[in-house]
Image (cartoon, rainbow, N blue to C red; front, side, top):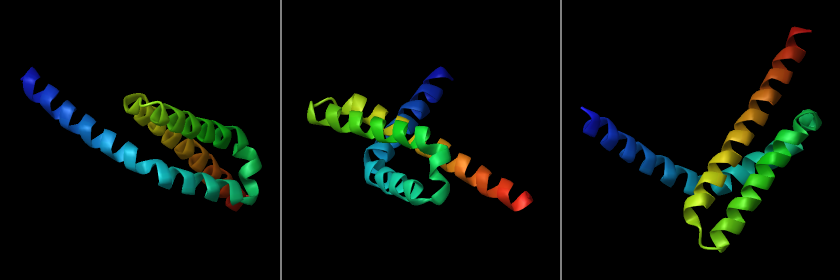
Length: 97
């Protein structure tokens, strides 16, 4: 039983690593789109954290540390998701007024 769970986790982990490695350009695009939003000043800290995580991923990748670069890419994606959620919440709140 434990082997099947572990095997599934390894497969899922591999898929997530491939996704994160491929996600860097889309993360940059998402950051640019968020920054262009007029309300982005409310999410500036989250956007800055996403940009810094992408910068760290690039540095790690150039240093040959792909494993940690992928993790930094995932962190950037999470910061982008947090900023996106905040922006959606701000938009929803504005519609309620």
